[in-house]
Amino acid sequence: MIACAACAAPLGDGLPMCPPCRAAAVQAIAALPADLIQLDGREPPRGAPAPRVSGTHSPSVPLDLNAEAVHRAIVRACQVWEPPVRAIVGLPPAPPATPARLVERAARLLSASLSVFLAIPARWGYVGPGSGVSGALSGPAGVLDMWRLHERAVRLVGIVAPSMRVPGWCRSCGATALLCPHTDTLTDVNAVDCAHCGARITGDDYRSSLSMIV
Image 1 (cartoon, rainbow, N blue to C red):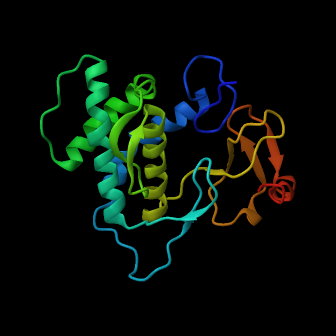
Image 2 (image 1 turned 60 degrees about the vertical axis):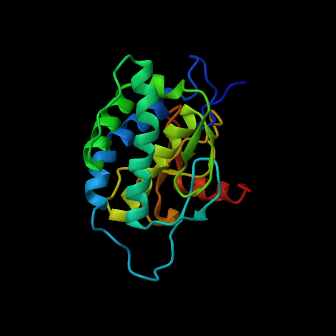
């Protein structure tokens, strides 16, 4: 069974990401130019412990949330993924640009052409955010990296997002696409919603199910 690259929900339309996750990815990529502006000049206190941030499929791990590092990673991601999408949709190579202009141009193209982006086969030379390792990454991996870069930028600059992804799976459809209002602690959550099927789980039921997550 083919599953969504982001939430593991079963797929039926031939694309490697389900419609709710595609919509969220489009919003995240489109927000990168604004993230870049917010990140400029923002630095965490020296010696501050790195927050623990959860990826889509991985347990919570400490990540380097240095503003300059995230800024560079956003620019690098746009440099890597804009050219192949431009070529596939028939656009000429883009001219040189400042980082801000490059990210604005690339984010507009990549968010508007997400289906093309998702169809890119594995290609070498991309360094995922926080990984420090080059490898052959496909379009879906690039989309997820840019989505996570947006989430890291939001956390770093202190913007309160309307919702955030939380660990666990939906009891109704089995998708790992649970969302709750943005919060620093899950003990205050009143309800969790599934972005895939729309089911709602009470905060108490959700917290009791966390003990079963390995």
